[in-house]
Length: 193
Image (cartoon, rainbow, N blue to C red):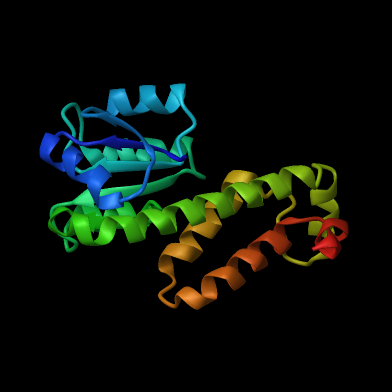
């Protein structure tokens, strides 16, 4: 069972989330960004759904905080309209997707599935990189011209997020992920793949 944290200042929106996903999950619901952060600190969430309207702050500010502190966590941003400025800002922050509230029932399940898959891939990349050893990174960078020897897990997650959100051809996503993983590993670990 996956854990979903949902934050919205509108109780009507919160009531729509569970039926829209049509799957058994653990739902933790709050109406403030402070409540959302508290839930994230106390649980291991698999997905965060943030409404642009929260009771204590703008949703985009809460989203910035979540993306900064939990870069591997799947995030979905709820907006009034897909043409909203906040939707563009959310996409630039690397969310798995933006869902317009009028389309919540139709699109949320699909976007959530993508967010779960993306989050899982980012966690695997982080695990692979941490398992490759810190001393191997400078060797890998020295062996490949133009490589930055200090590429961090957060930087790799950021690059993957940017690559995945800017791609329109979904068939290219696996190739980009494999490419990013191989680039971040030491030559010895990359051979094992």
